[in-house]
Amino acid sequence: MSGKEDEYEKLLSEQNLKDRLEAPQTETARQRKWRIIKRKFAEVQVYAKQGFIMGSLVGGGFGLVTGLWAAVQYKKLSMIPISVIVSGGSFGFIMACGSMIRSDELIAGEYQQHFNFNNQQVPIQQFWLNRKYE
Image 1: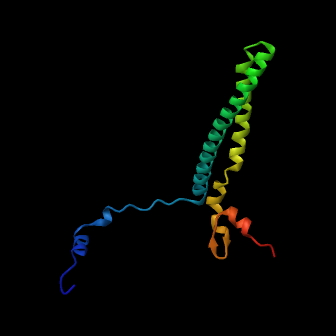
Image 2: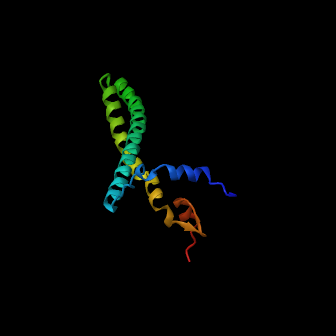
Image 3: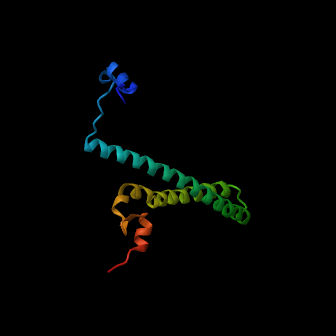
């Protein structure tokens, strides 16, 4: 810089920045694994809740139709809420379990680096579809 000192370098030399810097926090392998497990468990809980809500709505609607039919046939109005609750709860449970099983994004995020096709990273589903067995 033609004999002139850089202003940034001058500022750094005037201030004692070492006192302000903090040591990086280290994380053991066990802590890292536990953090990943907790994050994945939270994601699975979200998928289960969403699946239960969707399933209970669909099952409740089907239970409403079935309950109305049964109430007209047997002349008992108490059949409607029972049918809605049982159908909604059972189908909600099934959808919650299916949503947890179907949550393949949990696997994709962790193991994506292992799925290479022609030296390019591709989603897991495309890897298995495009794979040629020799």
